[in-house]
Amino acid sequence: MQTASTNICERMGHSQELSEFKHGTMIACHLCRKSIHEISLLLNIPRSTVSGIITKWKQLGTTATQPATGP
Image (cartoon, rainbow, N blue to C red):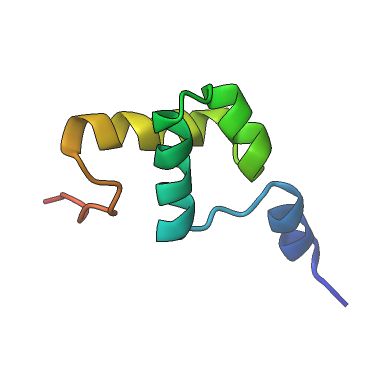
């Protein structure tokens, strides 16, 4: 039996890192002039995520996860 906290995580779309393949697919779709909305629907990924990945690619030239900065 699942606990309530596990069930909430499943319903809320518990965050996980996207594969390099999905990142590349987003960029390829963008280069083929697909809109962020179309890419989002195609890959079943939130528009904000698609937008963030494309912005990151434009600014940094990569979609690789960057190391966290901190104290």
